Length: 417
Image 1 (cartoon, helix red, strand yellow):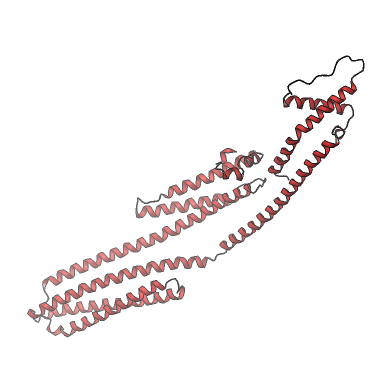
Image 2 (tube, rainbow, N blue to C red; image 1 turned 60 degrees about the vertical axis):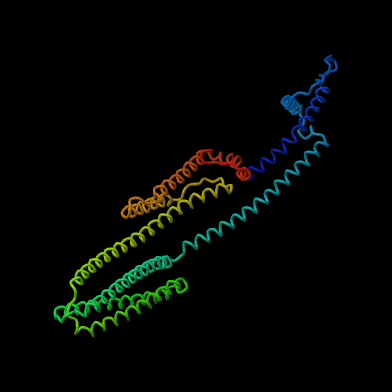
């Protein structure tokens, strides 16, 4: 099938040759009329006007001569002299050569297009064949990074509390000079020592957890977590030093346990304040954990939304690429297109619910994503509907909005069909 550009080139050649052919037919018409006129006819031959007639008159005369010659038994090729035949044959050969070159160019472009389509299909298949285990490892990596950050914050908080304990111990030591030996106060201090020992034990457990987490991260991806592991090692080293200091302080408290006789009343009030602060810290840590879980849920939900939206947009891109490639076959959206659109809307609704549960005011607005995707899908469906009702409009559309004209700044939309 000859493309629209080739048909236009042949039409240009015919238009170019038409005035020459019209002049030849007019001359032949005058010759035939003079030969067929009876000798007794006194009517003189028609004189040529001083001003030449317009093109429409030439065409009408040529048509009349053509019909008269055919009615008299003349063949079309007999009406054209040899000089004009050579001229027409030269133009015809040039047109045939141009058509042949364009056909060869079309074959090359079709072969190149087929090769690109095969390469695109291979790349898409590679993306689809990506193992789910790799994606799950990426999610696990992100969760482990958040867990490490939470443990680091908790360790810094414990270091601050240890510094506060050290200040309290110094204040108690200053008051030991005027203290009396009271067994009840000594037992209270012993209970405090046991509580501190439990705290040290918990710090040891957290340190072991950090060591285990460090080993797991190294085994999974040593190159990606090298910097984070360096920070963790520094934090562990500081924790070991702090634990050593706390152990020394506990031993000092045990040595002076025999001379402990009085704790000031303010120590009990400070202990109550400390316990209240611990409760607040636990509530704060629990809220941070909830926010981290919500953030992970938001990321998973919005990622699924973009996956389904990308599938729908790929359907649109495939249709546009097929049309721009010069295909005349009927096109329609794939069977799973509506399902992808609905899945994208469901994931976006879930994302909105999660964000609303955390904060009623957030930016950007997910509804804008959904409206934009729906507008694109509706425009493509309207475009395909018009193309299926009137397929012949695609040729005029491509002639009007050819790539050369589009590069000059012409804009088009589905409504132009």
